[in-house]
Length: 78
Image (cartoon, rainbow, N blue to C red; front, side, top):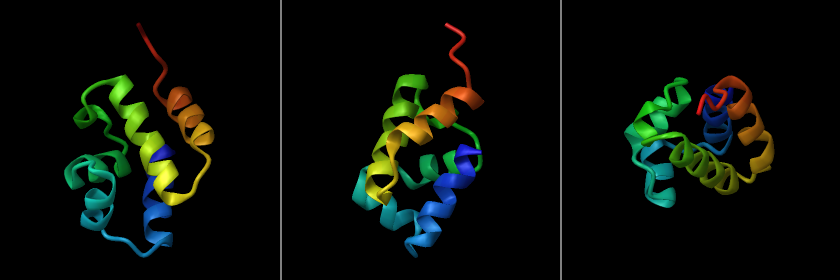
């Protein structure tokens, strides 16, 4: 699940939510929600994908893999 992958990447770097938030300019509350599989605080699908991409780059993960997993888990219904 994409949320768990985000959490594991953060923990592998030994970073707190606040540290990631300060570095990425994504609110800690949003990151925490994402880690728990809730992407509604992201502000919509386009924003969620952008935030996932930003986190992947920050953590040194290939963004395409995370975006593909997000799209599989949460298919675009529009």
